[in-house]
Length: 389
Image (cartoon, rainbow, N blue to C red; front, side, top):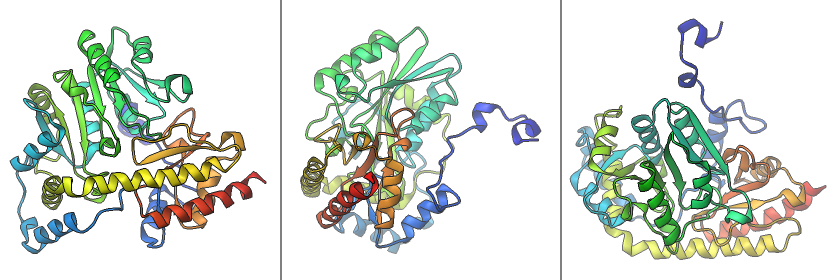
């Protein structure tokens, strides 16, 4: 008898996405631990940022040496940090909730606002864990197929309108889009804001990668009462392992989300101090990192353009990652990821971010040193030739 029958656990609460481990590993956790422990591994599989100097690290060191971690932080976050986040976004008259990473922000948004009878709209490809969270509370989750040139590889306002019904409670925009790097114009964001207001629904705007984009517009500027802005310190700040993020929304919405918070003793105090240091110094390092990632993806583009049957669906990427389509070369992205791993290069097959199109592309992130990008380009070319056979 399985656990659902023994303990009468409701199906949707029990079920989760099972991450299939790569060949040679017993579980996904074993795989990630292996990759993490290998200090020679080139890290292109999790969109993390490895281009920072010691500015933020010094703030971490200072916090640890002062032993401030012995105390609990303010349960809803330090006021200085919350003010700095709003200033960074250029938003006023809104509130925010600090979380243990943007993923927790996404979960709390679904848990607090979505209920039985509601429908949620999101894109495929996308960050699939959002749909997993939504499915636990909504009656229906619609994955809109966007892997094609006609819609420029993104969920457009026109596409969203086709799927809205009387039960639609939320539209999810990942902007820039993980895994492809597609993003939105200001006019498109304005149109989404109008859709949210006219249909009395929430617009969840995940802007985790926005600082890598040359231009970016916040939906909250045009629909502040309808928008939840998901903010992360994992990417441009290079703080993925510290697990800190936020959700920014109307005061009443944040009050609702507070009712489903589990971590009522506050977010990691070391992470908060690092986040404050990062925001205060952002102007000193952001352009350098952005320019480096733009140059890195240019090197990847030049490499891909030399290979028959391989192409980039979106270029330039507005994030720090891109998809490399291998379908015309008849190469399985999972086999490519496994092959590159033997060369100590960690990438991800597309099925991690798409239910229906993951067999087409390999996702690679490029916020790493240029010399590592050059190693990837060399090994990727050789991998294509080996795997074609």
